[in-house]
Image (cartoon, rainbow, N blue to C red; front, side, top):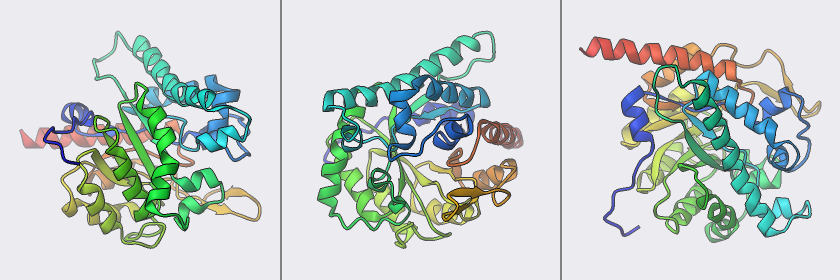
Length: 328
């Protein structure tokens, strides 16, 4: 992007004030935990049509747990996916706007609740842009084997990026990106919206590789070349791999690092259920390790809850205070 302007990073004021930014936790699996039926290709995005108030309530509970950033319910949303449900493009664009509006309403309610409490900077809204594989609803977002060119991926992502760019979201959350081609597509597409910052978060299959098998280091280098990418890291990745991935990323970029892993639970594909007892049950200590490894935006993905975000927030804010005290 040939532009001498410096990209405004909406994360900077929060980082300077708090030392760490708490991202929210899972949306879809938290909605399911509250009784929502998400057994179709639209996943959590279906509730933008059927039960938007439930999305708002989950957002609000994450704010109460300590989240500084809400990620919108647009991860699985796409023009094509909604059109399959009989909606026209204008109606679909309204649903994208609604995804941001629900987060804004939750923030407004939360700030009204906490007027008498300690002052804090208003939370941010990150408009979720999930991978092409999420639209396919066949698990390919954890493989990245789309068989599409960078140009085809740009064309596919463009309509929803355009719709979300018209909202009051503070930045894009380009998340669960499994391969270098899709990362390149999103970075190039962002250049069409030069005033919109984004974070870029990858899904990884181990402690050094993207879900596609490509090197995570190359993904970080690619993100580092874009002025519009204001943070880079990993999400929907098993917690046991996060520390290693952060250690790879840290010397390759000056951008803030982020991580919001899943719970690490195993998925029984035959029974179509999560295997209880196979994931992390206490996120406080892992969160401190991720902070020590360089992460400054930390939260949760699939199967994490408001209670997990609260535990991480409490542990990390104590960690930041201790470090600041030691530095005096």
